[in-house]
Image (cartoon, rainbow, N blue to C red; front, side, top):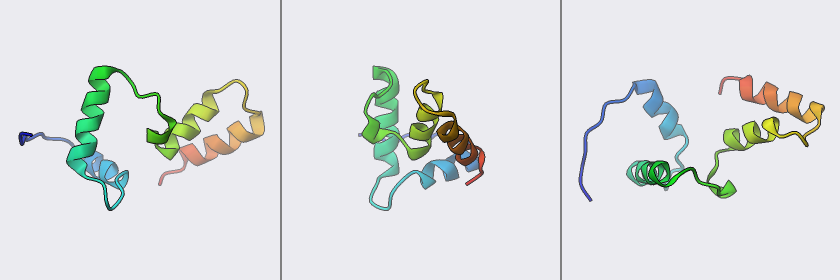
Length: 79
């Protein structure tokens, strides 16, 4: 392992930290995201965030319009 310094917008870091559980490591998640980026996107549903899953459902053709409408309402609401 090696330590690095990066500069990112404060709000982006706050949003990122909100995705972490208490037991998760910021460094471990960033390392995994970088590895995923280099290796191509992950196809594991278990690694997707709830918002990513809802957005994917909204994009599917086999989801009825009521469900799409509900998903869109949830996705467009600020957290």
